[in-house]
Amino acid sequence: MTDLSLAPLLARIADALDRLAPAPPGPWDLHAARLYRFVGETEAVIAAPDYPLSLDLLMGIERQKRIYVANLERFASGLPSNAALLWGARGTGKSSLVKSAFMAVAERHPMLRLVEIETADLARLPRLFDRLRATNRRVVVFCDDLSFEEGAGAAKALKSALEGGVTGPPQNILFTATSNRRHLSPRSTPSEDAIAATEDTEESVSVSDRFGLWIGFAPVDQPTYLAAVRAYAERFGLQTDDLERRALQWSMQRGGRSGRVAYQFIRDLAGELGRPLPV
Image 1 (cartoon, rainbow, N blue to C red):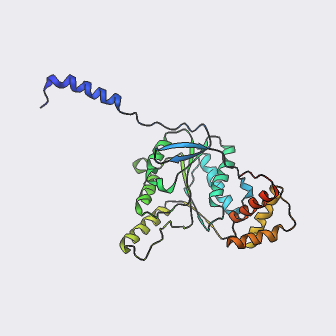
Image 2: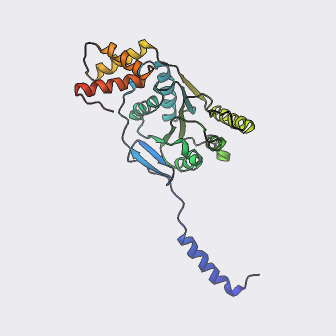
Image 3: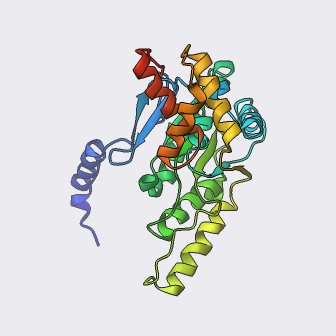
């Protein structure tokens, strides 16, 4: 039993400890910019400049643009929307679509924000959601190149954040991810424990099922690749007599065609002609 004579002293010690304890973090203001990067080590967000690539410069993915922009527009308007997974071939414009579509929709909805999180920081995603839940902004949380190579831990954290526990998922947050694989499963190795690999795969598939919207991206064919090159060249005023021939040679040197390869060719051509580009 505590000596009653010590009660005042214990009360003063408790008050002092309360004053020394850091206050719980409040919501971020998110007024300095529209794009932010989440820093896992400090659990802070850092403002980033606007994404400069225009949505209409993304060639060969008109269907994907319509679907994703419509879902994002509904979210920005406070209407029901789905977490989105953009999956498919490398270099087909998945992450560019997320950022350029955000910039286009944010022009019409000034309270819209985007926070990018690295795959390595997914374990902190529930806390990030808690901080963003308290803001007066509608926030797209974006993870580029999502996969669970380190096992099921990150998958469980993402599933927990998307489900939201007893409070439910935050109504002001839309999670969006890109991946080369639809089911987000890590690539197994022959030496990997079979039971653990199966459990990790099941956890990854369970997470992919939480995305209400799957948008697939197919490899780019030659006509689409050349159309992208011509569109970029026209937009940026780049003129050369052998544009298509050079673009095809560039793609052969790179070992494939994609929207990314088309833009890399245009960057090389702009540098040769001494013309600046926005990004």
